[in-house]
Image (cartoon, rainbow, N blue to C red; front, side):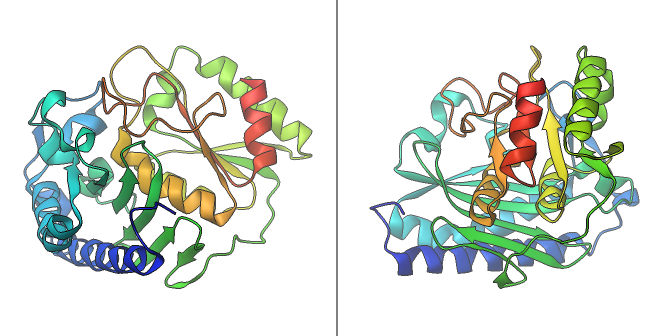
Length: 296
């Protein structure tokens, strides 16, 4: 727990973040994604990372307004995907204040506009060091809420979180569409097949089409799964707001979240918000994570 906040303060902050995420999610569900005008911003190297709509922008404004008063009182900065894309790194408040909100108002904009249930609202509270203190995710299509506070456990729909006991014959690997075109795709796929064999599983099943937040949450709900993003030179690989909330939820749920080398995610880099430099792995448990990391 951060020495700056008491247990009661963190619980209050989490409650407000939950209210903000649910309010934003309810607003998102008023729209038919097929009919929302699309705009492409100059961020990342894929359509998914560049796509933005008025729904993304409106959702972020709802969250900002909900958190504004408590943020001013407790000196918390606000970093949102849509507003941060319009300012330079030198102007970002996440470097100046002891804590900052890290918000993805609509992660999975591409599945949203395509009418697929692969999107979610994500809100995290981090220390300036990049350590997550609170993670909140709301999945509007399922009306499912995930949240966690560091040292206080992980919850789904306000009940203590527990993984599914359902065992499959496959290692389920969640990945973005760009994974299939990565230069190291074939070697990574072979490594995953070896991991599956070591675990006594028959094969690997790849699942594509979700945003990063939804991918991570599905891993947390699974018994034998991982979400993988390989390092690459180009800007992209998701950004800090794609992983901050789910990293907190994963750690508190007893699952795994790290970079591809098994080290803590760098969630407040000085030089970029992108994560392409280190890759990402979420896993249902430590055994799966360490097998995949070693195999890659």
